[in-house]
Length: 478
Image 1: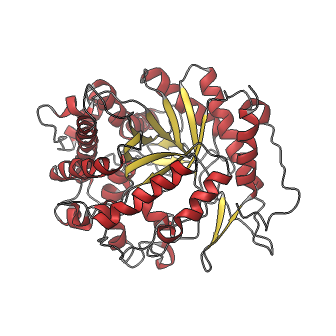
Image 2: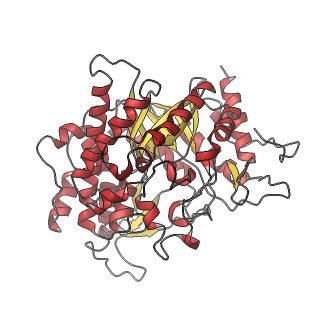
Image 3: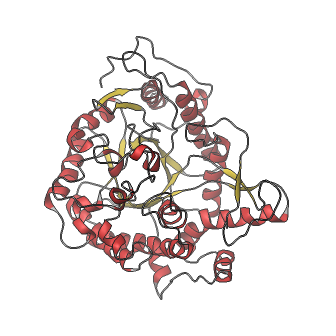
């Protein structure tokens, strides 16, 4: 690891260290990225366009007109980035596969050159003693599939299953941990309802259809992978998961209007995903809410059985929580058909550079609730981290005490949830590198490693060194 820019004394301590030290030595530590945010090379080796390539060229869609065309140039600098992971002493690296890189257009045979990149990445990780964790979909739908209707179209779920089978056929002999989807809420709600992420549509019914087809795609892909691995007689170790971004959904007050929007926020943010995955049904109250708007989830016979096939693990991503109100700032009722989850009301707590309030106690509550209401599957925290306005010194080193405090408090929240009985077995910090932060472009920096976008130089921040030292300390505690 290039720590030449680091001052001689970078040691830090937090008030949470003694709590974190209670984690077992077997606890898994990792970091995460996603393909479009770091790879670049969008026109190389047969890769075709994704919805994010298209969305990034819509005027005003992304801050500063930024795109992922180059991003962190990980496609060409991958061995160096794996070296950073190795030097930090991490157990695992969670990365995503770029669908349009390995199956151009979202249909047909695999692109050998695209798959070869991930083949090399997996081998590089394994050679470094790092466990690869593959995410099959982190929002980069091939544009051709969006042109055919996107996730609101049922056929996309089948195309996703085909793609998953292609990737597993190449990497399944060496990769044990597979995640189908990352944060389907974001794909459905931000992409098809609010229009602030690709593909930028604002169609509530289409978003709700996307919810079902995303979950169906998850179930179909999981079934294909299990079958390809030998079914009941598996040929290789296999752990299948889906990753959900979850939060609490509190009412701003005890008023009926606020209680009602909090119920809907919880239903559309948490239960509409976990209920079908765990119990093979959609929440009755949400189905009724949709029916009142003339919307019916496009469930066909057998779909819920496919969706609810048992998982091996569950990935949970957490960044912030909010309170919901059913009235506007002047006390006037909000129209539920236009704003089903109401108005977000701040708690008045310190915020990250994203404007997200820092709420580790709610993180513990989320994890405890999942362990209680959806039991029986080990949980891994697959993303947690924070953007801050990093200020490098003249050598490029970033002393990011705010990020260290954030990570320490949230890892301590994991300990609290474990103490409450939730089976949490690992933690992945988001993210390894500063990168393309979707509609925010390059202004928001989440990385524990600073990237100079002009030179592509990587410099571990103080938080990276703290994370390394914390892991070493926990491992040595038993």
